[in-house]
Amino acid sequence: MSNPISEEDLRSALANDEFVLVFQPKVSLLSGDVVGAEALVRWQRADGIVINPDEFIPLAERSGVLPEITMRMLDYSVQAIVQLKSRHKGLSLSMNVTLQDLEKGGVSQQISNDLKAGLIEPMDIQIEITESMAMSNFDRVHRDLEALSRMGIRALMDDFGTGYSSIDRLSQLPFSSLKLDKGVVKRMATSRQNLDVVKSSISMARELRMVSIAEGVESEGAYNFLLAQGCEEAQGYWISHPLSLQDFESFLGTNPQFEGSQIGRIHQALLNVLHYRKSLIDAVYCYGLNAETILDSVIDPEVELSARESRFGLWYYGIGQRIAELPAFRELEQPFVALHECGQRFMQALQSGAAADTLHAIIEQTDVYTNQLTASLRKLELDLLRTTIHGSQINTVSASDHWGR
Image (cartoon, rainbow, N blue to C red; front, side, top):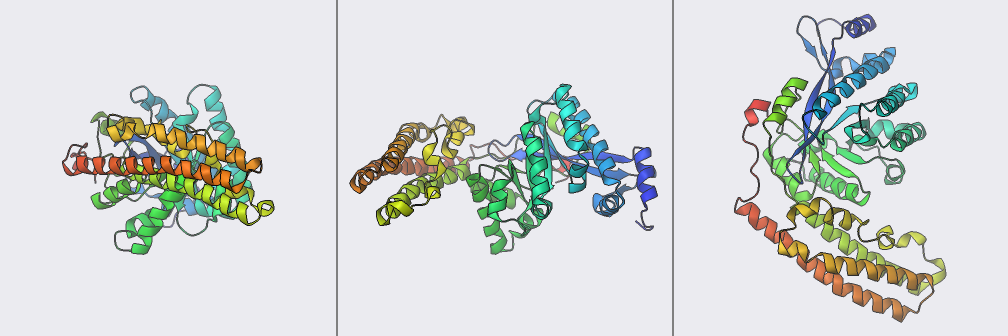
């Protein structure tokens, strides 16, 4: 803008309903379906000029106007959800909030009121908080996220990968998803280091039972790489620019189908199996050196879970069922369940002070199932690779130009 923005300008814009929402679609990389959108604020002036948030949010935050804008946008988001739900099922909208918004308490209270009024369900709306804000105000953010979590509202860590998080603190906050920073995602095309950060972040999200979301996807190459790595959701200009609510509904009305594949998820499942086995090996090794000093955390919590509750099980009995027609997929269940039964026996033996030979025998049995699982997973990976090469998977939506890719 040629003239600096004042607090009075912001308050006038609020009074005149000049702040509007646009919606950037999110796509499931596992299914290729549109699963929701991020609701983004824009200032649409009376003269038709549209001002991006980078130009007015800093002043809104400094002047204390931001919580008022956020509450207005929350109201608009709920209205959009109600409108979308009448025609499109299973969509979620996410919106950004700041520490200032959380401190006021209005966001949590309004969401609670909307839930009680039956306007929305917990799965309809998600809250995005930047990594830097979460880490620099840990205790306060932890308290507020816990309150939202008790309502069933999912929280997303935005801009992950900008260098603030410690794994310890990240694991303590009730985030359901990690959104990879768009700068890191963009730079992975030319930087091996950024590419490795993306790969590691996807794996870490899975280990922490979080959904991995990549923003800033601006090319087919980036989209395909994220598919191969097992990233779960994506958004960016290659998929669609942010759209008005009317255009977003039109976009959904075309029933867009993007490429979806579970080949990356299979690789993650393979790592889960290997990590499971390594956890048992570590326990026996440390137990053999000195049983009295073995760390409780040596055992992967997965070992103590039922098969269905494990990371592998959540995939296999969930989205994995979309490829249940493949023989290699059906081969997984028996050795997978048997592996977890061995894990349960291993835990009982370890806790009862069993001899090392007993523990070794159980590990030898787990190796039978581990080998069966890894062989079937590799076969399944190749089967999906062949279907991709032969073009039998869903093709990427071709109407890209209509949505500003």
